[in-house]
Image 1: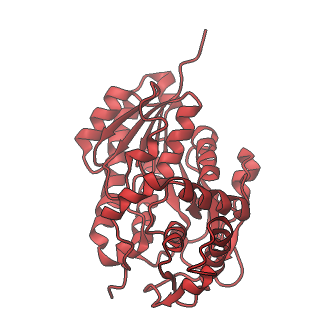
Image 2: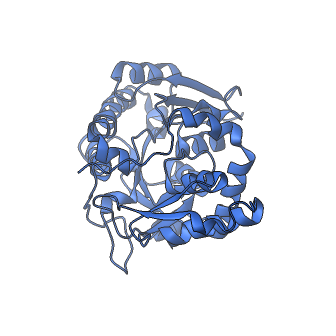
Image 3: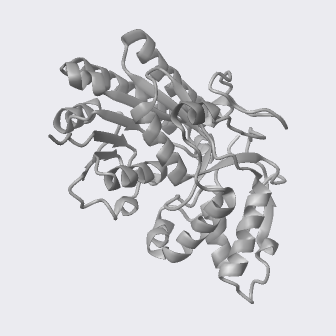
Length: 354
């Protein structure tokens, strides 16, 4: 007798990381419901390859709308909720923290309350299968010096409205496990990059500006360090954590690819010069423009993903060199995805409010 396909509800499934998760799960034969408000960063075009497949369905709704989420749970009957919906751009959180408080904190609380009621109403086998997977960021840990790594037990020290709101949501999820017994798993990831990334973030912004010969803004001196994780590697890790992770545990996910921001930008320039040389521009490094740093800009993030590797056997498939090459080529090959986004975001500088 065949086993029914796992049913997975993905909040934020039309976003950057969420869409990578949805595409992976549907390709593997899972039944997936994408639950997304379709804010500026949500894009159904990111789900084009799976959107009309029998294994995928979609509902446009807000995670702060408890009635809508309750209805989705009742009608879809998921075995697993993967919670990726979030406001996620530090610069936007500086200009408008209220949206981050509402979505990341109140929204997560709303989901937890509805998921708890849903889980309590399940029968024995279904109740035993159910998991709530909360996906978060390494930014909740604050900033590192020149040495050291973030571990799962690193104390929280968020320094931006964004990271503070995500830290709050992490604490709520942990509390719902310890207080109410809701079977949760948690994960904190390093900086993601790859296809379908909204062009307000460093890598897609640099690629598109370099293609058009526009200035390449680098904050401060470009010496801030991030650990870069290819988005499909992250999706694979999330799949493992959600299905095999121990309830109540958190897992760090990192790419083992620490790079200074200035070196990331220079690498992209070199690839662009090779793939799409433009005699009018010459070497694209000349487009680099150092701009006023972001307020409270964390100096360095770096992840120790040893627990995930030891317990679940995950290792990233991409090096930064292979992943960034794939990423640049994807943007060059898919202007039909990013051209319409100009109407939402003209790549202007944000996040300077003090």
